[in-house]
Length: 135
Length: 135
Image (cartoon, rainbow over all chains, first blue to last red; front, side):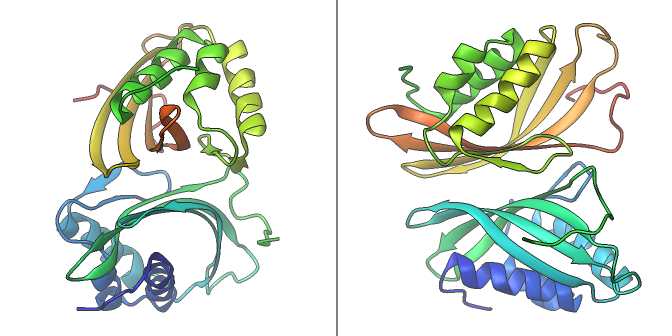
């Protein structure tokens, strides 16, 4: 079991797993049980197994996208952290066509396992697949 | 200043203000300062004034939609609460054409002002404007 000492470490590991299309690493980042994930344009997925299946489908079909992220707002206390993040995802096949995604990531602190991802809600802007930069 | 004694009361007031197209009520529900709001398909708006301007634009142009919501996952502690909510919004003009929206709502507890909305991230499913029910 990975140990993430804070929400930033868990988040860095989440995006690293995404960029590397590494489903085993992705599994270690999520809290157990009642996690929730909303992919862009999709309904809410609830529960660790269902969420992991969705990531497996995404990561096994992706070719290691380039991914940048920037936390634009955050708030936290001793065992909950919320980050609103701007993601810039460039498919390996079309590196100049980036999607700008906004995500709300919620992390929970579990005393045994450190900080883990509890919720990920991502949505695309309508200007999807135009040229974007993070600045 | 309204006093919301818990996150559920703040959420009920938020959706009531939305349904009533009541911008004055909406303003009382949000925390001060660095709030954040992502409307469906849009970029993140940051700061109380910018977020309120967006709601003013929405509510002044809407005709009191019918709105139902259902909390599908929640987690909280003494001063932060996160709800993932399924919204069903039926425009007054087209009551049979509902949009299914998923929202992540983050509430913060301020000792002076009770619970207030800190972040609202909403996204539409791709099946927008089909017939939906909450069940």
